[in-house]
Image (cartoon, rainbow, N blue to C red):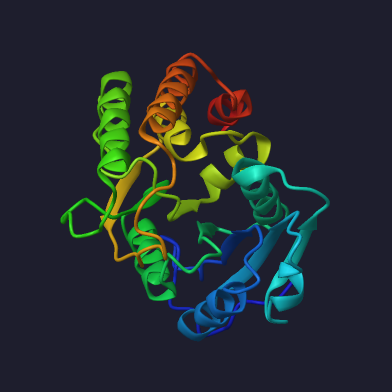
Length: 257
C-alpha cells in the first residue's frame, strides 16, 4: 500500500490531512487502464489508487502501473462485487474518502479533485458526479435518456429527492459511507439503489456537475425493449430498497456514539 504525499491538499473538517483512495473497477480494460492510473498519479499524486481486476481475461493486471495496488478477483463478480472489494480495502486501511473511477477512461482524473473538495468542504456523505445537473451537452441515446428520466422520477417518488444523474458511477464518499459499503453493497444495480438506501439512512448526498468523456460508442447496442426491461428491474429493486435496512450496525453506532 502506498503512502499519501505529505503535501496533501485535501483536509478534514478538523484540519487533519484526508487519506483518499481512488477505486478503479476494471474488467478487460488492458487498453485503457495504464492511461487511467497514470492520469490519476499526474493530477492527484497525494491520492492512493487500487485497481480491482474483476476476473479479466485480457491480462488487465499486467498493464497496471506499479504505483497502484492491484486486487485480482478469481472470476468476474460484476460491478457490485468489484466495488465492494474496493470499499472493504478502503475500510481495512481506514481511508477517509473513497472515489469510484471507471477503468475505461470516461471519468477524467482532473475532475476527481473537484469531487473530493466538494465532499470535504461541505461535509457531505457522498457526492455524485453528474453529467446533467447544469447542462445537457453530454450525448446519450434517446432510449438511455428515457430510462434515466424514468428512474429519476421513480426515485423522486420513493425518496422525495431529485437526482439528475442517478446512474452515474463517478462518486466520492466519506468514512461513514465506506463503512456501510464494506458491510453490504448492492450487486446488480448499485448506482440507483444506493441513492435510495443512503437517503433512507439520512445520509447527505449532493450532485456536482462534472465533465465526462464520451464513450467510444455513442449509441447503445441494447434494443429498446431490453432497455425498458432493465429499467423495470431497477425500479423493482429500488422499491424493495425502500423497505430494506442492510446496515443495522449503523443504527447501533449512532445510539452508542
